[in-house]
Amino acid sequence: MLAMAERLPESDYIYRFLAGEDEALEELVVLYRGGLTLFIYGFVHDWFEAESLMIDTFAVFAARRDMFRGKSSLKTYLFAIAKRLALHQMRKTIHERAYSFPPSPELGMLDSAEILYMQEEQKRDLYRSMQQLHANYWQVLYLLYIEGMNREEASRVLGKSQKQMDNLIYRAKAALRKLLDGKESSDGISTAR
Image (cartoon, rainbow, N blue to C red; front, side, top):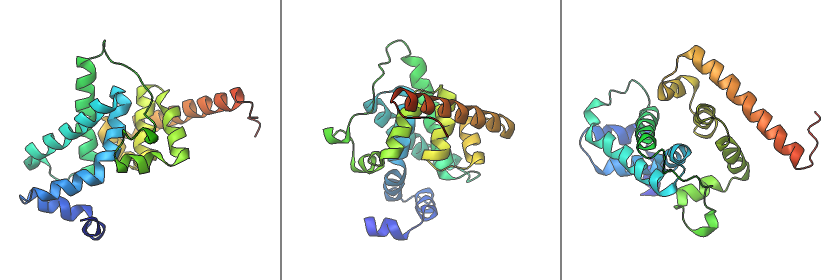
């Protein structure tokens, strides 16, 4: 199955799924589950809830497959669904939400796609630092630099105009830079450039 996934582009899976081949949805889940789960985790701060909402994201997509018109990439479409579900969940549980750091991959609590993703030391440090930022800043940086979306795709997911995105990206980068400079100072590392 993996060799088949390497040969078929995402669009083949989408076409097959929209044509009624439900097995193609499994391939789409494999492609996007890790990134969606990490994105949702940034909202709910609970790995089990994030995994559940990731599954719900694909359930909504499957149930409403006729609504996907291809005006954006499937990745953008799925992340927009995930954001709506996560925000809805946050509103429901705002007072009982528990904050935690991502579990260590050594604990065996993550699936293999997430372990591979989290093993990259720089991305893990960046991810943890980003979580300390305001939610809007975290979301835009995650979509752009972890998920690799372009500005237009990220603006669709976040529901922002291009001017709003430019301002948000500028402020998010400045906040992250300030946070990282502060960490370097507190670690005894010189921040002189």
